[in-house]
Image (cartoon, rainbow, N blue to C red; front, side, top):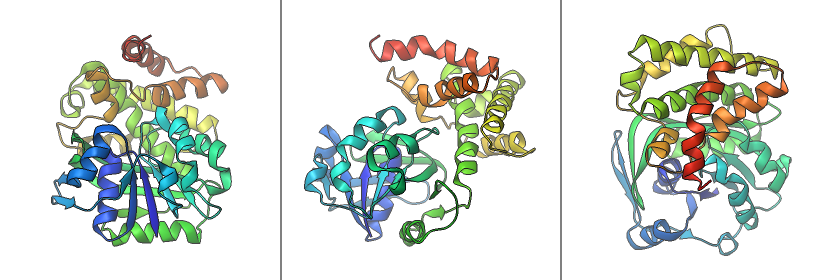
Length: 308
């Protein structure tokens, strides 16, 4: 299998690196300092599960020069998907599958608008990882995993081939029958965590231990669960408890990528997370006062980061 990784940050660097280290034919689509570092020094990953490096990295900033691939994995920020998808068009032929690993729920439809819905799988991942410097990634927490599946449900040969590639790379990979449920479960997990972390500017170990902020997360979760139900997704009666257990299992110093971007004054995935909650809630005539407040508190800094 030949795989293209679009975006070489914490997600793309780690999972793409694992695939390449296992002998999978991987091409990294990168730009600027990251591309220079990959070409000059290769890819280095410091991991709680064991450090590794990929010395001979195939990387380019021009997808047209890479040739077509069997799978394109998008690991850019959620707000970068439309532009990145247009640039990545030359990587796809009629048999290519396209898988987003971003946070949020809207990437599959954005990719379908460019590549056609028949090529797109739903996808997500779990990892606490970040860029140390270009070409150098640190996996700091959580057991890494990927999930992907057909948007309309059911197993397929093509998702099994991609799963086999990840298993060969010693990455936990699953192809659930209902990828929509999996996507919403991840959305329920990441959205309150990102928002509360970004506003309080402390790692999860601090705010999850405080009754006030823990309860705020629970209230935000309940609103998201209601929005999901309005869209036909039943997250289950134990969804809040499951999500809290995941929070409690994270390293005390864990932060989300959105939180780190906000704290560094960078554009973030705010619109793909809390912004999406607001859009879906309005469409369903549901009130989400906690999520709306969290969004309102973060919007001024997001506007500033985007030069508005």
